[in-house]
Image (cartoon, rainbow, N blue to C red):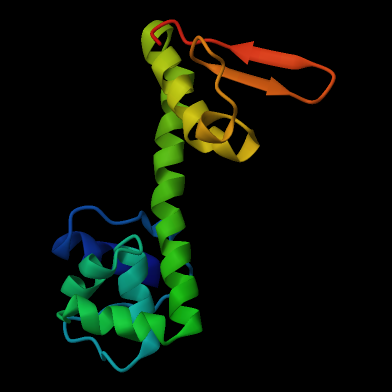
Length: 154
């Protein structure tokens, strides 16, 4: 059994919602029942199996959340690991959105597409970052061409 599988099994025994083993970095040490809290790799593992949530990682380790938060803030590498672990849950959620877009039709697909454009699409000009058209929707322009999208329910 790989160490990632062991980590995932331990995490699932303590918490029902952990990243699948294939999403975890391959070099994470296995969390034991009595983890060495002075070992930064143990804190790193707890962050990953808790999707980067400091409170959940602290509970997993039996630490007050404030103590773990201060440790993370004082360590550049733990901050980076916390942020990378948080990106795992975002990636998992995006996967569900992609599945829904691919597997639905009609109103469900429309609502999912609208969500994607107004949240994830902000980086490419959709959502609140884009100028709103007067009737509701979006208007994009590259200077010479314009695209206007209006939502039926707005």
